Image (cartoon, rainbow, N blue to C red; front, side, top):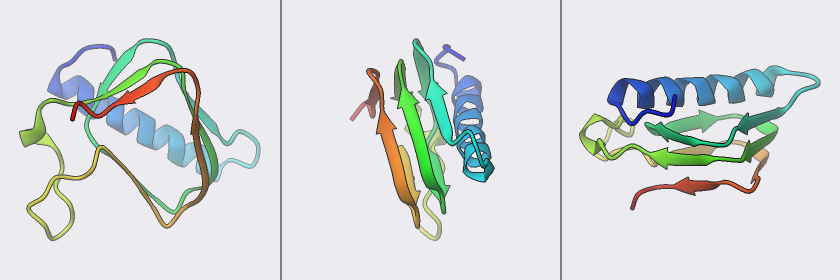
Length: 102
């Protein structure tokens, strides 16, 4: 969704995360494309992904609604906009950009 509402931001984060997890389970299609346009999103947290290509052709923009961001486990601090752990060979490419709004 291209709208900058809290609901759209949560939906975009879920769609992106689920697309990456689906690609992580695939034997053939191990890439996820974020198409042209601006997509506003809540934080995206990923663990244990391997040999994945994330192609950003548009703009992935962090939500300005910082009070609605998820918190890090056992911490009062917010999650990072994009956090990838316990993973290998994750490539982020394309002609688009990531805007953390920081």
